Amino acid sequence: MPLKIMSIIIAMDFDDSKKAIDFLALFKEPVIAKIGMELFYKSGPDIVEKIKKLGHQIFIDLKLCDIPNTVYSAMKVIGSYGADIVNLHAFGGIKMMKEAKRGLVEGSTGKVAKLIAVTQLTSSDPEMIKNELLIDTPLNECILQYAKNAKLAGLDGVVCSPLEVRIIKEAIGEDFLTLTPGIRYPEAGADDQFRITTPEMAGKLKTDYIVVGRPITRAENPIASYQKINKDYLGGKNES
Ligand code: C5P
Image: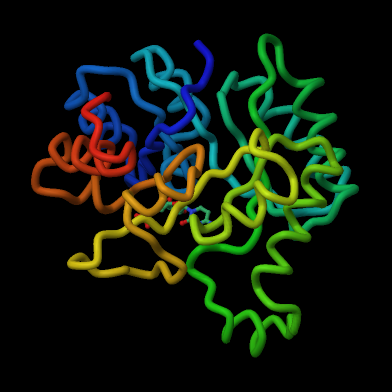
């Protein structure tokens, strides 16, 4: 099944597979489930197959960043899992991203997953980037450059904040995918996120996917929270 644009990706940040599977059992419809480092390292690749069998689509979020040859080999393995989306850090450079794509294509037995590059983490703020990482280029410029590098390397899109979606799509094209975490309501805390927007604002900025974790997984009623976020993201429409 092709991935539906303007969808929520649920960040399944659980510390074991039972919790993840029990959580997904709450949903009557298929969702896009993001398997991040915590769940993947704890449960191993089997968790991908288990969640796929339940009918859900999968984003494997392992954010690879290493020398090109290592990333090529690792992506070859990841390609064999049959996920719908996989990612890496743009910080590794164009050569690394090209090798990642080559590995992913070679390792895939069926359709090739969308390959997405993380630009700057949505938890990073401009002060940290300037003072700790010694990057003096304004954040938006830096993120746009990483996105252009990803496009040059043949990737399908980037992970960024909704605040950066317009500048990226206007420069690279509307069909260059944006996946955007950092989704919060003003009344809820930001947790460790920094460059945040509401679901409604993310929808107005026309991001392709919003990645939402704690506001759904830690909600008292995760289904109600998922539906509210989805409705607000879609501009008040009830579509699920
Ligand atoms: O709980 P919360 O909604 O903050 O979860 C956001 C998810 O998106 C986490 O799983 C985090 O690893 C991921 N992510 C992010 N910022 C990025 C890339 C991924 O927050 N730039």
